[in-house]
Length: 122
Image (tube, rainbow, N blue to C red; front, side):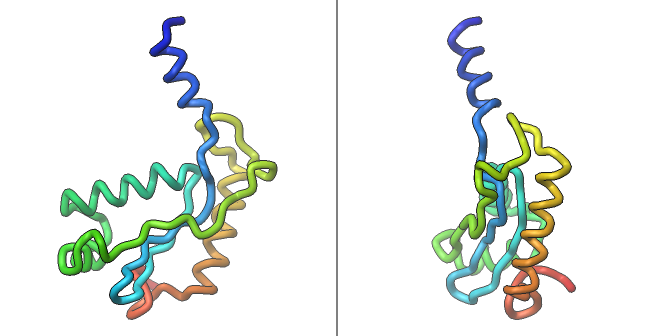
């Protein structure tokens, strides 16, 4: 195995932070919540879509266009503890996805990111 293949394998086997993330508009306070096996990767995807003016949440895209990228914070608000992660490698297990869904549901209940408070629909 050459060095490039070893680096690719190491990357694929590196544990990524799993948990709940938020995209917060620091001007209006509106929030988009989500959960992911790889929060950092998904937050980068959101940023990429916003920069390309092609985000799937039109209200978020409109605010990004109006206020600019400096008005947004991309944060992981709760991590799955590494010792509690029920996954090995790049693929999430069904148990991990259930835990992430439960964590997201708790955050949705706590934050209520609807209407003026967020980018979610009821």
